[in-house]
Length: 287
Image (cartoon, rainbow, N blue to C red; front, side, top):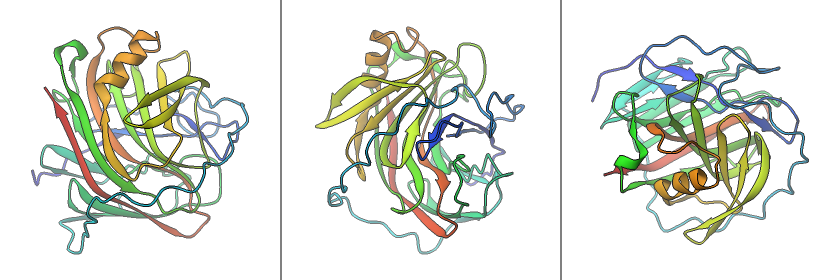
């Protein structure tokens, strides 16, 4: 678990700060592969198209108090990197600094005590493009994936907290039928915390699960985002139910392979100052 893997990032599109521009959420890959060609105007893009020009919804109400999940502290990191593509394998997961948009990004340093206990300090300029997506993810079958219908359970737990300043979203990123750009590749995101960020595509409907309501955004190229209306600093999500619902609505193809499941933060801006994202729990259960 201590082996360091080479990771290639695949950008995703989402707009920042309500602007009609291309942002990026990137899922990282632990197998070398060429960087996908960009279809973005202001930054490299992957399977998601430019963000909709739909007006940004009103900012969410003040987040609820933190859950009772114990706060973990990473005092003595096992791994530290400021490399734009630095990463670390631990416990069957991969922790990735993933500064995929390094050409526009400011400095960022990730320190990890474990795959489910790490933090990142990032300093990003006050502009609209997504700069980085530090994350932890699980590759399924060495990114070759397995058919969705083979699973009766796909669940995950999480605990992550953004800095409360700047422009960002904290989100799951799932890749289906491949990872990154490619014919037939789909992407599903679940946003658990959102500050002035806007998904790609159009808002179509709502989805309710676990006592939370999500606005569902989608485009016509295989991108789907479940955006929680209220902040979730920790909890669990039934990812199988979300994928199945999206398939039933025709937003995803039937029985896709599940190739990668990740969770992290998309930094668009920190207002030029240093900001910290802390992750204190993550797990994926598949059976």
